[in-house]
Length: 149
Image (tube, rainbow, N blue to C red; front, top):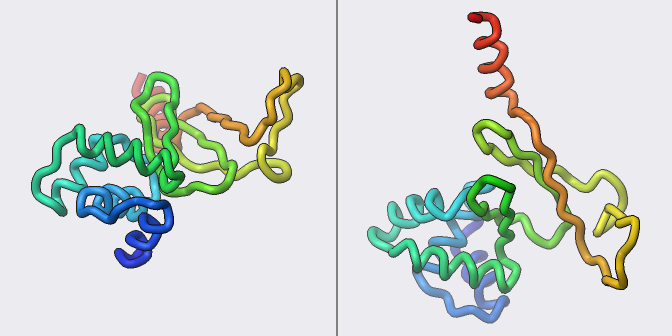
């Protein structure tokens, strides 16, 4: 987990005031090192601060995303997820069953690390790819289920 001082400095450098809710939300995301939805983040923050409205959590997530301190991904059929890994063009792999999400580094070159067949005049800055499959635990559960049938 990043030190509180480092997180406070990150907020200041992004032009944000350091508030207890904002610091707690950023700390929760930075400390987990995973991809958590707003509810999981809210649960963690509430354990630290006591009470905080769900709306306050969403408001802080939106602000942190806007200034580039967190990244939001939205896998199809799943709630938005947040992570502290920003500043690179990595991708994600998502389990179809349980929704566990992991980072996948770019496979070739620097950002955007994928080239579209036509850019339609856009200046492409990043590519977002989501790989889908079954995580090891869900694959094991499928195998166990198949053996019982």
